Length: 160
Image 1 (cartoon, helix red, strand yellow):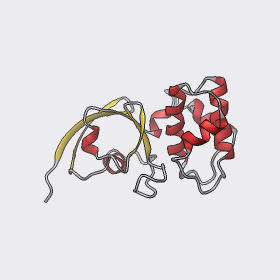
Image 2 (spheres, one colour):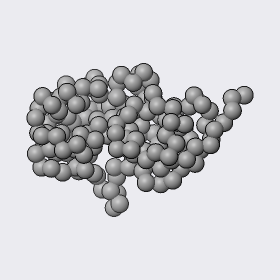
Image 3 (cartoon, rainbow, N blue to C red):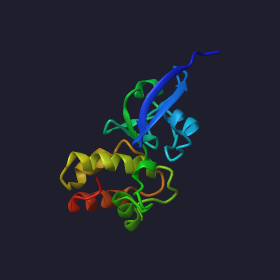
Image 4 (spheres, rainbow, N blue to C red):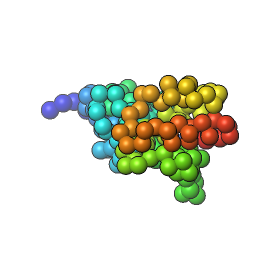
């Protein structure tokens, strides 16, 4: 039997205390221990971006980060985008307006990557947006509507 490690961190602003094995990924801890299933597991190799969450404001592939590495961190998942009144976050609204998803499997990763991009204050430059989103794979949309949604948010200066 593997030893368990006590870890504490914040998820979507709430303190969390878990016992995990040394090899439990942050993605598995979020999904299995905390029932935050919006963080999707695709490739489990850090390539597809479906499991992207923010850790201390930076996007990370939660399938590659061990849960014990999140000790003391501030983790934000796609569930943390919801508004206090239950409404959509401006990023979600922009993706909705632009029809920037089809099956939706990749959407949480794109939303969280977009949140980080907006926090950087990057200019609304299409090439820069495409480069910044290049770590997220979508097999359905062709990326056009996703890029348009992010450019819209950058032009409006909203979504953070």
